[in-house]
Amino acid sequence: MKLNQGEELVTTTRPHARVLIWPVVALLIISALAGVGLAVVPEDDRQWGHPVVAGVGVALVLLLVVNPLARWASTSTTLTTQRLRTRSGILGRTGHDLPLNRVVDVTYRRRPGDLGFGSGTLLLTTVAGHLLRLNNLPRIKDMYQAVSELVADVAPRTEPEEPWR
Image (cartoon, rainbow, N blue to C red):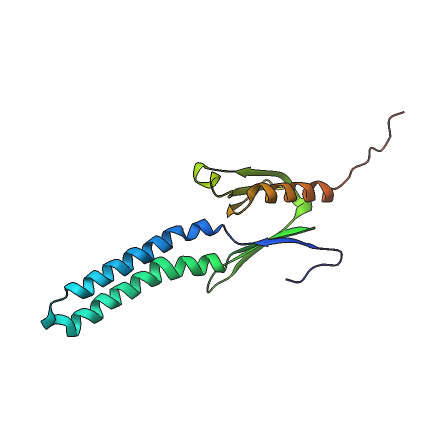
């Protein structure tokens, strides 16, 4: 990532690894079912039965394991002293850069499933009223604290035209 002049990298993260729990469970189940499927194919039908069972197993692994893993690996959130940058996508990439001086509210949400993992959702409201939602961030309290402090640091300072006397 190319940084602007005077900009420093604070942190880069991916979604919390807990999003990979279901793909791992799927891999175990698919492997078990494929093993059982290969074992129960009658001996007379093994010439076509084994390739069919293996093909279905491979297709399910690609859909339920490799796809979520690739999505997780291709998603990142980068926080610098001036902006929050998100990137995602496997074949087509999507990116968003949000200058921190455009953020007016920083909130985080932790659902019951997040509590044991320390993850959560970071919600940023911009000056224009748009909401940026960053789901499944690890160490959500640390990210919330860092973003809040940086937003306060880069917020435009307005001096009153006539100071109080």
